[in-house]
Image 1 (spheres, chains in turn brown, orange):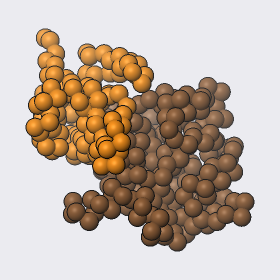
Image 2 (cartoon, one colour; image 1 turned 60 degrees about the vertical axis):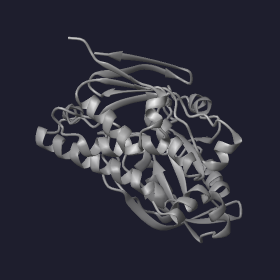
Image 3 (cartoon, chains in turn purple, red; image 1 turned 45 degrees about the vertical axis):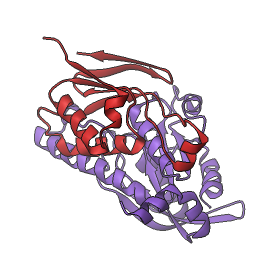
Image 4 (cartoon, chains in turn yellow, green; image 1 turned 180 degrees about the vertical axis):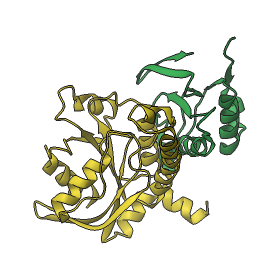
Length: 211
Length: 113
């Protein structure tokens, strides 16, 4: 990495203040099946009346980064324009056998696994091109996974503004408090992207954090 | 047959470059060994480890890795200013042999099969 790029990365927060952009690229990150595409769809449906992808119960449904530019969010007199970047789920293992139980043929499962590994690499590479992150975690799951810790560590190292989205609060065993206690240094907004519960609080947080 | 565990000291890790560490980890893990790093990896090294792992998954013999470490801790104001982050004790193994049972901020329980 060149010295200029290295300095830019290290003092990114200062760079952002000095060279404020009109339009921000906001990445939606998280492990597989946390609800990233559902959240991206919720944001796009609310502000543009469209969707970016089709969620699925089969892990690694999103295997390529998807970008939707020019989403204008207006909350309490504040306005931000963002490019929404929906990323594939990040994982340290991809086993095609895991897809067989969803009824996929071995050939389909292997193809999906191969594309998933490429998607993970693409998602990690995108971290260097973003202005802020929505990190989606499933409130019904243990948040203290290595993938979550690694993503948070990389966002902190790049000094990117971060909001943790504690998703799926409509489910009975959801515990956004567990996420808050695991990552107390970061803002956590509990939502249900599927049902739209508390989504206005997320838009408010985004306008304040990224604006 | 037993499982080989390689415990890598802080001193040894400090003499290695990032890619050297990643290569050493993946070569050992692909041979079925468990690697324990006294000081762990930086967040960037962990992300790089995941990237290289994804490239090397062959869907037959190697399906990925299981990594567990304690969360990062900022050591000092100087470290914060310089952006230096130090990893903490980290355990890495083949995903099909190492399973995390429980992880807390200061406790990791894992099972090797």
